[in-house]
Length: 128
Ligand code: SF4
Ligand code: SF4
View (tube, rainbow, N blue to C red):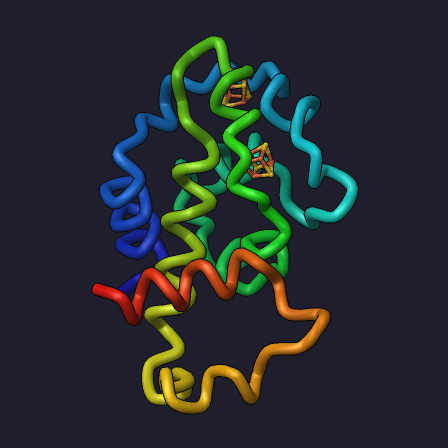
């Protein structure tokens, strides 16, 4: 799948309309993880609309997002940036393919530095 197609897939999964964004930055201004994230919610919206998903998929920003949905509440255009972050995170985890950890060995990988979002995503994945 090309990077552009992956971006379209993320948009489809998120159910958002990035073209609604008026680039006001209110989402990023209110994001509690702003200082931790290499890419901020408004950049997720902008980059995904331009087909630049790979940089987002390879960034720790997808695990720094707290899924608090403050960005969604603050957006005046109902763009739902958090949904895009979630979709990019899901696609990144799927891409790991054969490198996926198995449920049996999951506890071996958990330590104090394990991002909570990663644990939640893995739990969702294996509880389907
Ligand atoms: S959902 Fe994620 S991107 Fe949105 S405000 Fe919360 S931490 Fe920031
Ligand atoms: S708050 Fe909404 S409209 Fe403003 S930059 Fe963020 S996504 Fe775009």
